[in-house]
Image (cartoon, rainbow, N blue to C red; front, side, top):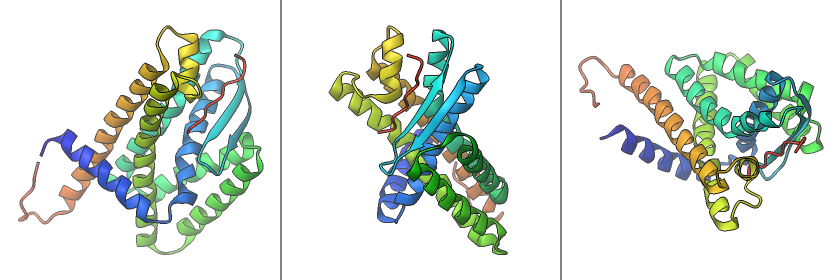
Length: 241
């Protein structure tokens, strides 16, 4: 089976299974990473992050100040691309059996977001709850619990990192770019339409998803016995949905 076909089948299965599980609470992990990507890029460009808001519908907003108009482009690109790269990163860590390290990275992002950036009520409550649960999993003496909790976050991050840009593509095509989040903002400051920017986000997410699944598949093959056969404006607004 080709690697791209395998990636598509993994994504389809992941999307189906995560809809059957009680995953609503955890879907904001992808939003948190998305907005964190915006915030870190703002700081790298010597801007100032005013606040981040996370919402119950899995959307988010990063408000920031930038002195240069040219800085809007990398900041707008950072959200979806950070979420896609994060999905690849956690699967690469899982493939190396670094379950605790991966959970500590997720915990660090949540802790920094809560301490420095997120200021709305729901976002702060959600971050505190997620931090408490993840720290509990890390501190309990159950290796399998850490492994499967981390794997759950891996697959949910993978699915959300692809479905977010796909939803953005459909929204941009339907609305002509109005309300299309980062793609709409990029359309305002570049000659390219929102639908094209959304497609770029989606293709990048697919590529990262393929790399993540390749890492996961390689980990699975390594786990087989040796005898088993192997198969080959000044405010930046980032609205997720």
